[in-house]
Length: 269
Image (cartoon, rainbow, N blue to C red; front, top):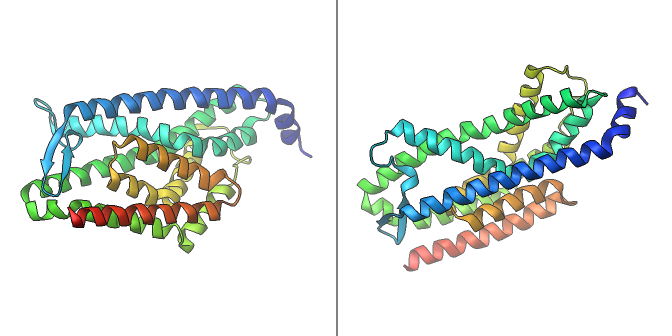
């Protein structure tokens, strides 16, 4: 056994407690921030649309603000939401990275783990910018085309059904397996560039693996707090609960059922 393995074992108890304690505090702070953000958006109300749904103020600039201001605000709060949603899923992977690069240098390894986490959430920040651009365009299109707006609830249900069906795909199984088997990078140098690269790789793999579930959340309503909690729990469970493949298929079956109900309600409205 090499010295790295010995060092990890010697310090893993205290280090693990500190690591997951800090992770829990970050999760709690981001969860509170997300709750406050959602509450403020709900308090602002929205624009009723044909088909029985409402356009949130989230997708348009408030009075006196530019589209750039709205995009920056959305991206910032999106990343706070991503920290709350994805921390339970990514924390074990970041812990493995911390263990691999520790080698008796816990403080420096902690800094590199923070940089890896920054790389991971940068991927989700980019996704948030793209989501805002797409959401703003779709909102404008719905306002200009009432017939299209009327079909939006049914389309959202179809998206949820497709997201659920992808849970049964070979693509999902492959990327889910990759999430559990990413190299810990114990061979990597303790430098910022290497840590960021590892975080970016974690983020890319995670995006490929759970992109369908995030699409389902966007279709159901990005500010729907129960939907956020359920999707976050589903993403964490399919990675870390034993028998993740079966868990993923169970999540898929549930999503399909929810999507069908959404479509039926939209068609019968």
